[in-house]
Image 1 (cartoon, rainbow, N blue to C red):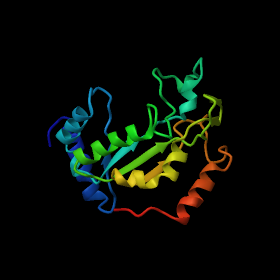
Image 2 (cartoon, helix red, strand yellow; image 1 turned 120 degrees about the vertical axis):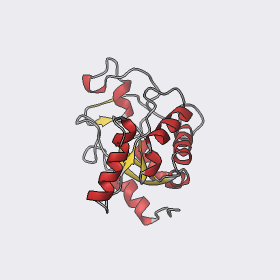
Image 3 (cartoon, rainbow, N blue to C red; image 1 turned 180 degrees about the vertical axis):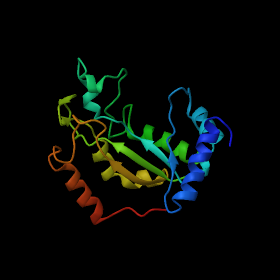
Image 4 (cartoon, rainbow, N blue to C red; image 1 turned 45 degrees about the vertical axis):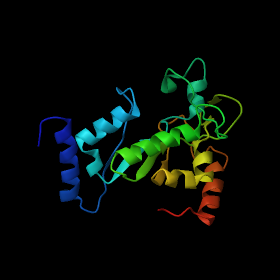
Length: 192
């Protein structure tokens, strides 16, 4: 194997196949250092990510509201904006924009299934920000009320979790996850 990132990716896949043959392995496309989705896809394919079993897609590692505070807490320090997406898909950023990018990765990286991880657990609110254990975010709400949109872009599953201890979680979300999960499980979307 080559002594570079291509060799590392190949080694990880080979080790999974040899030592954990029932395990699945995937890589996360990232826009860090890339100026387009096409550049991300070209990089992922150059390292052999299309030979894995799935694509790992991250939505956001904190509740969107945490980044909206001014000043930002040390555990939510990040520049930029657009952390809270429009669920009506009328203004930007919105979920259709995001899912279009995910579909582009899915199609460009071997049509591998997509698994979302570290999806924040905040609760929708018209008031920006929030506070410890109660920041706003609408990804759980959208994902669990629009699951067919996720499977349409190659989605296989979603992992909901906090990326930091001060974030909203299933014990502080006022029952949002339990209610939405129960509704989803009563009528789950079919996987392709």
